[in-house]
Image (tube, rainbow over the protein chains, first blue to last red):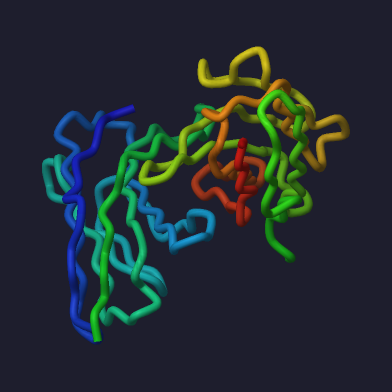
Length: 112
Length: 114
């Protein structure tokens, strides 16, 4: 599975959009980009995933560059409850074990 | 849908003792995963089951560790002769058949080895 690079920490003002970047320059054609987050003292929570098209759900939007070497997770209106560690994971799709390989993620601090 | 549950939530033990953790996945989820997370690090994959079959084990899973999922429902993770380095959060996750896209995690069991 491809390696990802994320900034260790970011701040965001409450109510503003949080844009979390991820570099995955060695991503393969069959590998998806997944985002999970982990709020303090809880297990990780799935947010969104995509292959090459931009994706949006009720939690966030995922923007993947055309060359697929980087992506951005967007939380459109961050709240204090979005303070968490955000993990960007690259993994092959079907036919695999499904295991997730987590890096150290980005600690997002949403401030009032 | 009650989510993934883990028991106990916290365990304190003395070095050399054996401990066992339980994970109850979301019903009808056929895949079950165990991860370990130490302070300041992301979770690390330990092992996974498809139904009752254990299909992959990480090198992190030494011979002191054993996991079972006897009837393809709940799973147990046992650590024998615990060491201080085993202190960590042990996380369980499950996913439904044909949908490994998303894993649903439990709250974890925090193990402290004194």
